[in-house]
Length: 65
Image 1: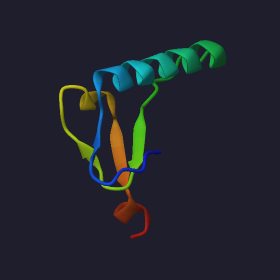
Image 2: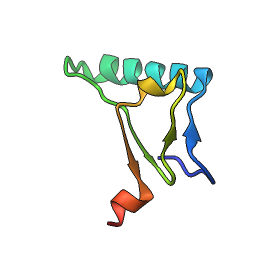
Image 3: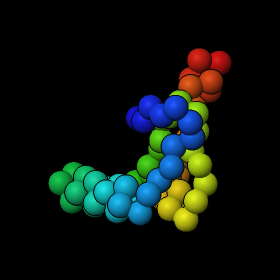
Image 4: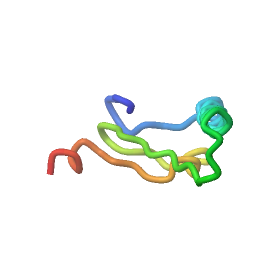
């Protein structure tokens, strides 16, 4: 979950951090299932070179609709 004053921007280092977390989770849980990163954020996700690592986004408006 991320709180930002505007759309959340995924940087290269943050994308690497997400990949490392997924890898660590898969290793320790021994899952063979697909892992999907879903971002829950206030104003959405700003599309850029690194944003494709986010499978889906849920915004504040969608949560409280």
